[in-house]
Image (cartoon, rainbow, N blue to C red; front, side, top):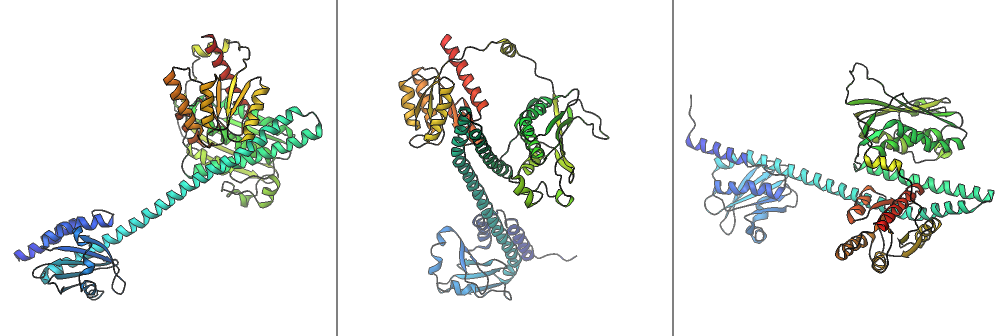
Length: 549
């Protein structure tokens, strides 16, 4: 068996060691430095340079090692000319620079060229040939670095675009909600004051139009948040039968206005499960609202059942729940059925013109159901109606036991209504007018401030039972004002005042920012009267408790 000579073994060892250090990083400068640092030592060479651009292209210098060589290479006569000595037919060449340096030029196929300098005799042909496959691997590593850099650049651009879209949507939401808040709130007040049928009819139409516009804004925001992956589920113990019944109760007046019957079908016993109450209710509202909208006459049935999956043995800790919404409406043509869950899609253009809407409700609903681990489907017969349903496998939990505080709450008699002294902080005059009117009608005294700095000064001067604070304001915003109030209270030993965020910033992150700043609760504009009244009730209870302490 023939034996390898010492020189052959040395070349193999050289190739092996250099192959190990090729492509150790996807950042081009780092990868080249990790390669050439040991390579120069092994080869007894002085410096290394890399140019982007193959033969026939203008070379662009991208790397030098040691770093001190980076600035002086362009002053060396003959270096650029030496690069032209390699190409498709010649993978490496050796030249002598005027200053006596040996220039070893290598082609990096698909990327550019490399140059290694040596102060004494040039590298022998055997070493140059041994370096040729190493340089080919280095060229591939350089291309991989370029691909990685391009991918990272695209990713950063996409992330920046996503952030910009998020900021735009948040600003759009705020700017649209602010005037809608005034339109809806003042129209509701006008309806309460008006007793003339024609005027009430006109105001009702205006109110419905404003609410419809608000729903469109909400649909776009929800769709954007889901597409961006910013929706997080918050499971909690929930009686699903009570939720379904609550949705039906809320939607029944809308159905009755169209002369429809809204029925509810519930099992004899429905469990308590862990599920995101808000998201599940949103899906049921969307499906029920769609059914009412697309049903000219007849009925809508909201159903809940507990099917046992075929071939599965029931698990005591999990329950399969089927929700369905069935209607006797216009139905969906078979050729349109497969696209019914597509974004911005409705059965046809005439449907959109007749019934309105963004075409996002079903898309949002299906995506939310998917986030909860379920699937949504539909069957429909044109002219007879449709049925949308989805199934979820949910953890079964025990019904929460009534606590001592719950028992006291059940036996508690409401305190007499207490007139509160409240501070309304908002930079928009329409918002200050609306909120003050609502509070004054409820029998409360109102003071107003147009920015956070003015609010902070008034809180220090007067005793208030609560503050209703906007977020975005000039001079000092609501978050900064709240932090300043909390710091002042802590330094003076004052009892913390009840601060409510009342803002058109309606993103989930906005609520979290408000609570972290020290606010007690959060309400988004336009004001929902039940939620607003509940907050006032909490303020009254807290004020009465503090007064009796």
